[in-house]
Amino acid sequence: MKLHAIRLLTSTVLALGFVAAAHSQNSLPVNAAASVNRYIISSDAVEQGIQAALSQGQKNSPELRKAVLARMIEIVLLSQQADKDGLANFDRANSQLAMIRQNYLTDLELSTYMSKNPVSDADVQAEYNREIASLGP
Image 1 (cartoon, rainbow, N blue to C red):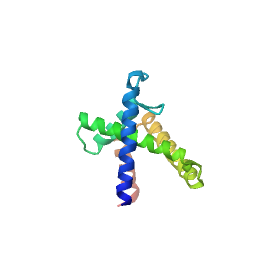
Image 2 (image 1 turned 120 degrees about the vertical axis):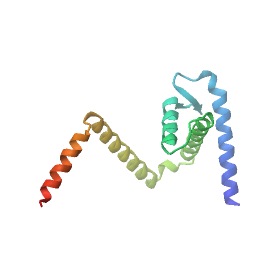
Image 3 (image 1 turned 180 degrees about the horizontal axis):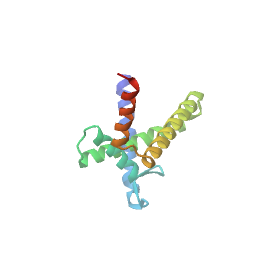
Image 4 (image 1 turned 90 degrees about the horizontal axis):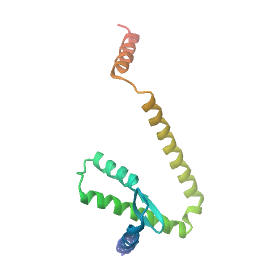
C-alpha cells in the first residue's frame, strides 16, 4: 500500500512538472530545457545527464532525452517539496549537503588539475620503469 502511494505521488508530481514545463516552454530563456516552478533546468544539465546515461551503455535516442529531462523535472519537484516540508533544515541534511559539496569540489579540483597537467603514456612508462628498477633483481 505504501509503495502504491509513493508511486501515485511520484506520478502526480511528475505530471504536474510536465504541465508546468510545457506551459512555460514558450518563454524559456536561452539554454533552458525546461522551467519548473520558476527553476530553470539548463540544456547543459540535460546534456550532462544524457552523457552519463550514454557512458553507462544506453543508446542515444529521443526517448532517452525525454527520460533524462523527465527525471530532472522529477528531482526538481521533489527537492522543492522537501524544501517546503522543511527537510533541508535538519542537521543531517545540512551535513550531507556539506559532504556532497566537498566531494564535488574535490572532484572538480582534481579534474581541473589533471586537464592542465596531463600524464602521457611515456610518463606512465617511465614511472613504471623506475618502480621496477627500484625493486632490484
